[in-house]
Length: 233
Image 1 (cartoon, rainbow, N blue to C red):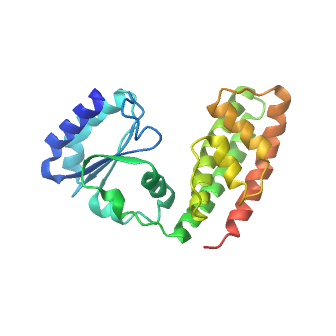
Image 2 (image 1 turned 90 degrees about the horizontal axis):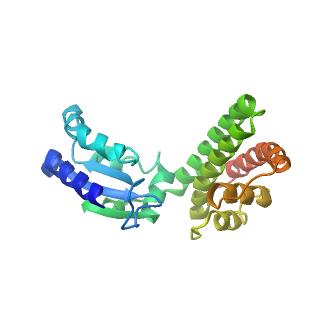
Image 3 (image 1 turned 180 degrees about the horizontal axis):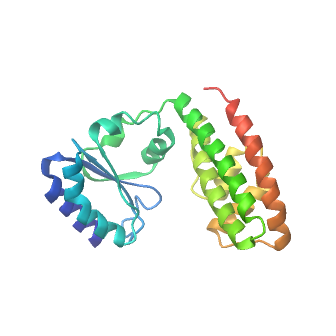
């Protein structure tokens, strides 16, 4: 993790005592030898334009090493965002590593009302995006495969949150998440499992499968949105 160690040192040098915490989150958070694609949360006590200017050079180098751009916020933003980013904070709470500084994750408190509300909002956004992509790409198998990859990625984020709403552990494999959430949502498990296997396990579609799944996903997203809207916590 030479890139990470160097990045942390540069942030400490630039921000000094103003740097509160650096948190790794996501699928690579606890992979000690991860080479890239590491999501980081950088929390400072205060954050202004001068601070952003100071760390812009190391952030650019970090991103050029094929890592996502870090999430940068001040301490007040961290503590005031548990409601609007309930899904993201619940993901961080379940899968994180403190790289430097204060353990801010221990303060995360997720209200199920906001978690369900964000699930509904994310599903509504997914439905809108899917309809638009469907209209633009329906005659392109290659583009529709990309669309479906993004659909299953988003659905898995929502599904993890649904499991947490019901105090259920979240499995690691995508197909196991789908199997678990089927206890609470009604959808075509065969279709969603196929999407997960194509996205994460190098499976492929036949032409007939792709045509069927394109239409089935529209019905499933619409149905799941209604079900999530009817949930109460």
